[in-house]
Image 1 (cartoon, protein in one colour):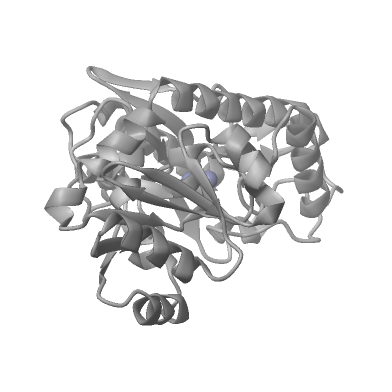
Image 2: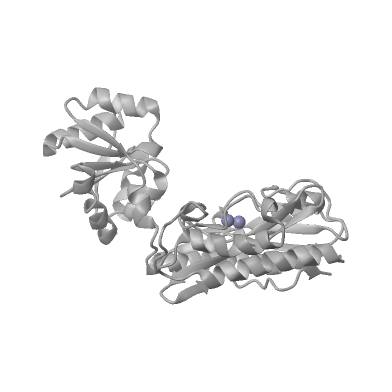
Length: 356
Ligand code: ZN
Ligand code: ZN
């Protein structure tokens, strides 16, 4: 934590601020380890304050020993102003994407004489590169999802509903220590597999269906994200052909990943294969995204994201082809960017389409 805080302080001068008000819960957790549901941080060059209410002061002191815990009895704006006044600070940065209009105007009203600057992605920028402990937690979240999928795969048979399979997946992940599913589990079968985000419905899986599962676990705040598409009981030529193209695109994108490469180049590696086979219009989303304390983080493996990949970034690689009224295929792994390539964290096999 101290290292994370000092890296954030290094951004104060370029941003023209003396203090930074952190209200995004994931950023607050990243910088302090405080896991309560209500609270905020105020960081100055010299001091670190954690503001919360009576319910959480004892927990905050335990979880965030580097912080001075302030019990907020009135409003957060008043508490912030008192600290700024005491330290004679007049330039306050805040997280523009994580304040409501009312909170922003109220802060301005209360903090007389303080220049308030809404900023964007300051802590998120630090979170892009994962440290060793974060990588360990993501690996655990990935491994929980891998094992859960292995456990439920024998249940994927004609007659079971998408919702029941999703429930089994979530139960298996929770049994293995996950706090919950990373997002609403996607289990889309038959023509529904053409919906890139087809959340599990009451539809029953039928023989010959393609079924796309997209899910992940949350472990100590960190997310995993995996997609596998399987064919139930039988496959046909077209299913095999589409699957082969998506797999080739996904493997090529992974092969393109290493430090120094642009995110957009990885997207291109996958997209060009799908386009060359004539399915460019059936792949309407980006190739992948960073993940960590949130399921979607920077960088995006997208044609417009020119971020240069660095060691320690963790990204998903998930091209897909979706054909309306027919079905779709997506394959997604989570990988860690390294100097000379990347490490695939997801261990679930992806070479085989058919499950019997
Ligand atoms: Zn996913
Ligand atoms: Zn994803």
